[in-house]
Length: 540
Image (spheres, helix red, strand yellow):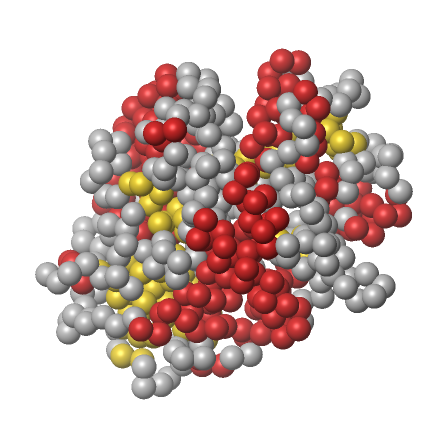
């Protein structure tokens, strides 16, 4: 499995950089950092099981002749509703285009272009200009596949470990020194072995946590593992209450978590009730191109008012040939389910999509724990504030992965002379897997019902009380039975749910993605990040 070389020590695998996660952020970091160190990339399922593969819309960047960085910055700040860190916005907007061009010119990503060879830029909700570089409606997959092919050609400098899941981070604090990370225990899901991997720095690139909610656009792997692991070793996490619900997920019993890209509305799609009436004009001056928090809440309100199970996205007024060419993947999937968007409006509902909170980092991806970095959706850079501007996520992943890959050169840690291997103690193999599946289901339903698009003080209090009991049950179960992938994910998702609940309780106002019926207005005193660290507050 591991290359025979001077960096292989019996019982311990050693590298310069250990990357947890194989999405865009993880692979782009590995590519850049391999120029000055040996990299191990851990992926808990296959290397293509990540949120990046599901990203349809594209990556935002100032690439058009009529666009400016100042306009992109202003759009990001406006949608972020008073909580964006301007420095992070400036970094991403101004440095982003060079990385998009790198993907196009060096990695070979075939972005859509016009007849003159210029980027064929799209527009999405919250943007006042066309600035979304895309590959039809499969941008994430196109970028990720090209990056993966490139990384696979790097030989021993980048080792890829699919079907491996990090259990916990290794810290010097447990050996009597100051708190610094020097590796992780990693569970081999094929063999059941827990390996010890040490490194000068660990980079959390584990993606989002959409599976904490019952309805989500995220794949099954999105269980917030990186946030949970970082929190357990004392890293600060921030703004977990700001979970973005995508307004348009395909409503069909056979369509598991299939996203209907915001780009459809960017090209003129209109949201309608089932009776055919358009409704977004009643909620925002930008109508169907309002930001995601506005559109998701509007749909939620209309569904509650009418009792309907879904609304529809109407594309039938646009040329059919254009729709098939621009959105081939969405067209193909809809047709498989008997929906021809050229002639029939698409049934859609909101679902959990993106975590704007995460492990708090500085401008180079450093967390509050030495030699621990976080990039991509698992991080909280300050770019998104209280609500993410569409297609700024891939932008952030690229920029901060590159900055972390440069900064990590200076990482150094005094690893203990003797590193304790994983010890299972008296843990036995469970014969009650139903406990895990039942608890998982309970958490996701609780979060959807009490901590979803619209919240209230009473709902949050109920959620907090129940989550305390659930986490106590999980702790007891965890220490009694041998680890497996399902149990590790349950442990992580329960902690992430608790962090979301506690963060929401600490924000008695409505701002961006967080809407509380008991506190519908902004509070100026709360125009700041919600920061949590281990031992801070009764719920976590």
